[in-house]
Image 1: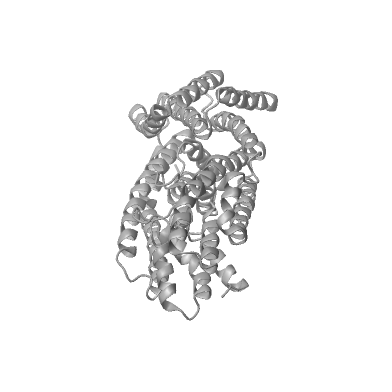
Image 2 (image 1 turned 30 degrees about the horizontal axis):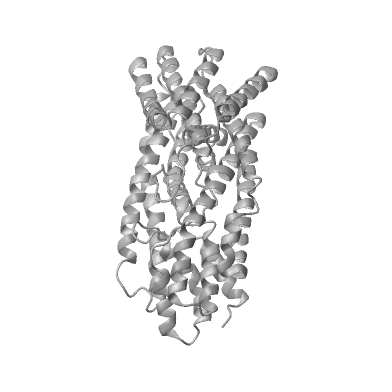
Length: 230
Length: 246
């Protein structure tokens, strides 16, 4: 197990990234840098291993396929969560299954904690925009709107700061667990979870009789690619 | 007065922050009114009373897909410019909410975004280059994203009350079913490819494939159960790892 090297500068960079990614999810500009594959790759790159970051981001992405931001739906906040999961796995020094499992579970849990903080932020926005007088002068509306976005970035930055060290340490600890039974059983749980989430994701898109067949055909094509690749 | 080019540019840029003050009471209305302000200030130049009335009108609850909200911004501003009555504007505003949400959700959240994400994951498996995969995702997704915002902004101003036709038969209507079918194939392949990357060699590979297929079918048939079960398994995995590894 290598040492965990996390300087204050790196922590500040993570927090700044977390704030920007949190802002992107809904407030501004929604270019999807907040998606797990992007956020986790950023996190991995900051800790020196972008590929590890992408991998954990891809797992989080598949797990979140069924969670779409329709209307007022509550869904995991993926920006800070992906960033920290990617950074955590990269900091552990590799893509061993133990650290990967902990990084994925941490990212998933932080995503839902982030969702709670987003709800609180939206309640606060209610107060910011409540009452009359916003339209006179209209500059008041512009100021409150900007304030809401600043608060959203602060919220995401705070979330990132609060969980950066715990996630790094947890993932690092998993690096020391090497017992094979634990790894096999735990990774089997993750894989079944991914399969379930994939099925849920298909259900979200459209309900046609041929949907499961297309899903299985995609899996078969991938198997063929793997076999021929080997 | 008719909004100038610079008013339109300012309004369009504000549309990127249309959800900036999203809340459970007025939903996206704060962002909508904020994005309309550059246009309304021109329309009601020199008439602060009517400007105030218009802003208050558009602070009433409103929702819609964020990428299609520019259509509401410009269509409503066009109605204000054309001197339509407040009652007619309110009715039109209410009628826009559902289609703007439904059309955008289906196109962007359920079709375009998953397609770009799954394509990116597949590219990563093929080439192993994370920045290429991320770059392709961001470029492809945002080409569609920016085009949709620009299209809806333009159509809202030119069509005004007639935007319903665009929403009823949008230019992408024939393409979406094809991309959806492709997405289903890509989900199946992405789940297998990522599983192959993360599964330890000690797990039987064909057993993994069968377990994935069975789990995916269960998730499809019982999405609510599948969602809860998947979350539970993901969180239980590291706990089990520590318990058995300790």
